[in-house]
Amino acid sequence: MSAALQTLAEGVSLKGNLASIGYGLAAIGPGVGVGIIFGNGTQALARQPEAAGLIRANQILGFVLCEALALIGLVMGFVYAS
Image 1 (cartoon, rainbow, N blue to C red):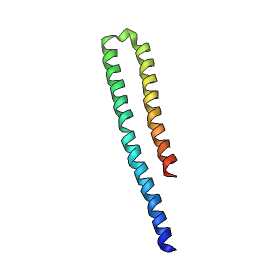
Image 2: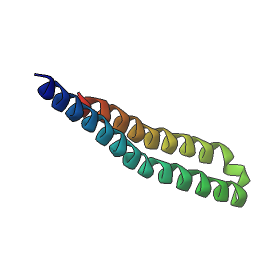
Image 3: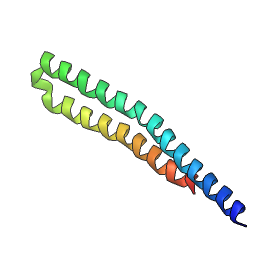
Image 4: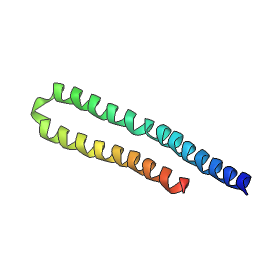
């Protein structure tokens, strides 16, 4: 009986570890996306400062969409680990 419980505990631990690795990999995409959004937004603000309001609004919208992907990746790790 003890061996069966130990095998079960190892399986659960492995699932949790794989979920953590999966979330780490899933966070790469939104991280790159946020960097591109704010990098290009800074360039756009430098070129056309009079359009600051529109550029910032688009930056925030893009940031929110990228971070939603990261949060979905975090939640999926918990869903598949259980």
